[in-house]
Image (cartoon, rainbow, N blue to C red; front, side, top):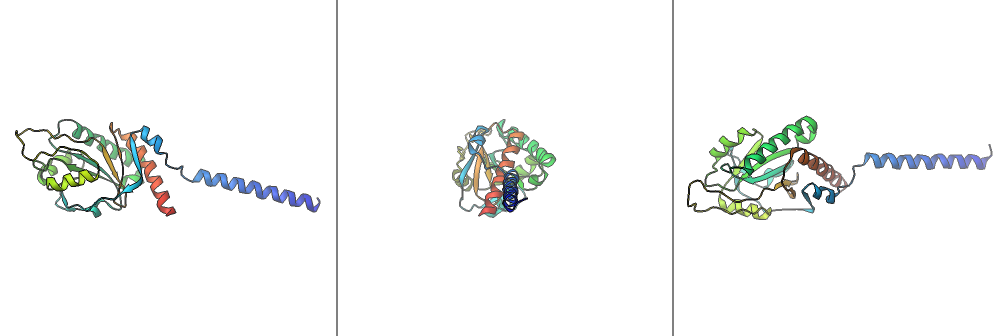
Length: 221
């Protein structure tokens, strides 16, 4: 074999190796986050996660809740109240099913997700009331209460509308509030939200994609 042919063969081998390397690298690299596809599933992920001011609330276990409470793990936050007749118990039931699904099929991710229920009705939702209510859905839920001013301030920062009841005219009053599920990332920033219906399989898929994208961009930065 002539020297020219040998060089050509070697060149072709190197070229094929490079192509195969690029192909394998592309297969092993997570696909970029397609926000348009996520929107079709009801998930709105911000291009730039939003920071919010520090807060001063308390959990149903008596622990102080501030911004640091939301760091190091993903946090799913739902604003509701224990006397809610429909959307709140339905949502908590769906989130309990989500926890089970994550535990069974997304074991690593399951350990990286917290579930937080913030009351919009602190007049009735005391620490004791939350402690009696949430275990029906799962002991992994963290109930949060505090002053109506502090809760309303946090809800406003997170774009969650609700009509606070300050002086109820009757005992069995209702509180109008959003049904969105909020996503806070491990840095403690507002990462996005998911609109109802909040089906466990849908949320699990969204979380998996968002988590993958977050870790990819965190590694790059």
